[in-house]
Length: 322
Image (cartoon, rainbow, N blue to C red; front, side, top):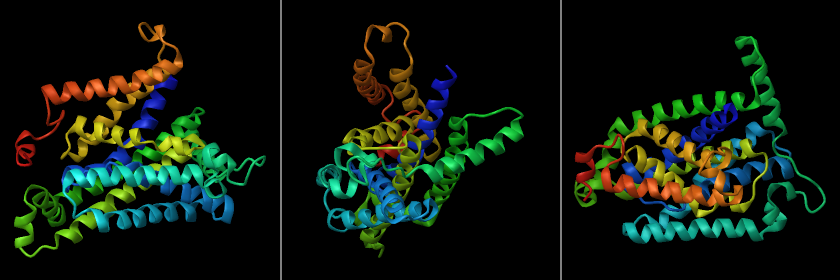
């Protein structure tokens, strides 16, 4: 049971960072980006390739991964953010799938379907995670000396991802309350009126896209560090769907509701993996993976019926968008 809750906390931390980027883009700026998983993929692959192929240290490769995600975000945003919201959603879904299929088919660069373990080619197991594991051992030693007992690597991971998430939550909250954030909110509600005040709407959209890409890129790094090896299938469109569920669960304009939505999602996500009580025991482990999608979708449907503004959402603010 301890393993279950550790997995829940680790997963919730990663998805809090990832979903926070979507909250800026979708909840605050009104930009429905359905390709957000591509930012995670680009950041994670850039980091892994930089370490394995170019021998960069992790602390140099990680910022490079985030920078690559932001660059892709700008390249995607420039031709698409002027589109109407429904067309923007379609364009970002397509962009996300293009990135995934490129990663799947560019075997010489990304390792193809085998993933990062194949970055050095068939027959040679590549490892991008050794420096992170050494850092994790250092954190474990520090925590063990403080706690007086030996802590696990999962606890060490949580001790890194959650302080990072909390700092990002605080920074995002301050940005949302700043004049920049208020402009994004006004732009979401009435773009024409904001433009009439002399504001460069296009510039603000690019900035929102960039912030969201950076946060998603950092989430991608933590995902890569947690799993030790990944493949293109780890960045399917369902990844972005999970982020939308988290943002909507908590309340799509409430920064501090993101970790609540992430925790609730992680309980469902981990429950279909670890828990084995009735009626889950009636299904095989493979079938339970499909149950995960059913439970998440059902939770979202019920929420839209009974509380469309989310658990901590503001009904009056959401009403301005309709």
